[in-house]
Image 1 (cartoon, rainbow, N blue to C red):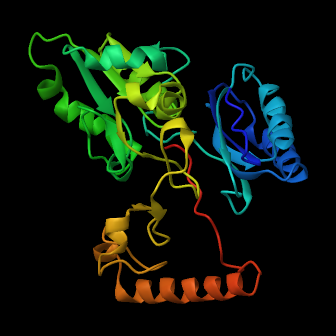
Image 2 (cartoon, rainbow, N blue to C red):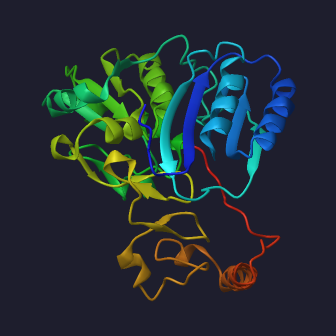
Image 3 (cartoon, rainbow, N blue to C red):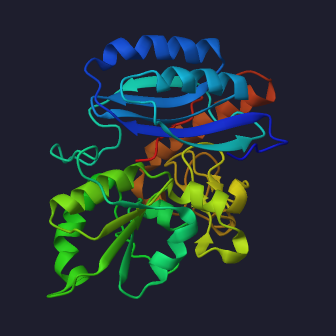
Length: 319
């Protein structure tokens, strides 16, 4: 694990597919510990396990991770660490969900069947093989920020759309008589756990996924050897990161939660806190007026050194 020296806060992106019989009973002790340790972020609990990203002091993060590892079948919790100069979340939420990453396929069980893990240092060889089909399982706005060279972009707005996309594209992807290897990746690995389990259920045997996701790849593989192009969207106020998990160059549209580039900011459709080129056509003028007033109130509160009651980080998890 990198120590991310020089950055006072530790960020932990974590997940574990496990069987939780009573999520409600697990929620309050976990939420209380996070509050006691000054931890912020979002954790999702579902019958299939736990998923989320949290940030705080190294000691606080250590205490919370120790607690989570004590939950049923969570001793092998998957965690990716990075650092932050300032707190990337406004508050702490521990939420109960039906799935820890929403695919909408109730029969998928990554604990029973999953693709072959590929370590970051071996990933380049796999995706450089001409017999390998590489699929990015993330959402369209994430792929727009960066991806692996030559990867297929499903152009899905949500991970829930992935199964239908694959079923529709299966013949064109695989072709008659072709038995290519299928390599898939996502931000931290959790979506690939489900997507490879889904492909196995669909009868695809030669399925691989990047262990630890893009985050582990960017931390492990030197930039000069990397096949990653661009930056990686993350689900907190850092917005994007690059090689070595360094802070990226993108901002965030606080209306739609999509990443915003310098080019986007120069567009006449961009208005801080109100709209960006991606969402301007999706919102009514009435909605933009509401966002404009919210942004005015938040800016006023910030200038007076207080938290605005409506301020919130629409914290997403890796889904």
